[in-house]
Length: 142
Image (cartoon, rainbow, N blue to C red):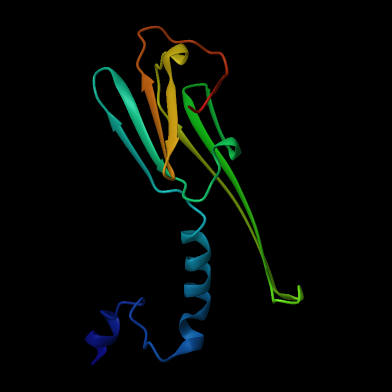
């Protein structure tokens, strides 16, 4: 019996024990929804970044490349209003979401960086360069 207690996985608490898991599940759900899922691929000629930003408008996404670091920032505001036939407000909801991620991607030719946003997916291609430049570059999204 002592072995059973020592080998117990602390994430396997009884599902009906609401108070034991409340804090863990509450904070886990808050952090999972606020991150952007990102894939980065590297080959000999470039880096390819693909980030999921569903529901974001292209004009609310900002890309910067500075000191060998790509920064992706997105802001998302949604206001929903629902009224009945008489125009009385039944429900109004607001949602605000800001996400930001940074990725270290060295030796990039800043003048040839290309970005596009379609269907909630941001795609950035960062061609590699032989020389290292140290200036800031904001990247337009096509």
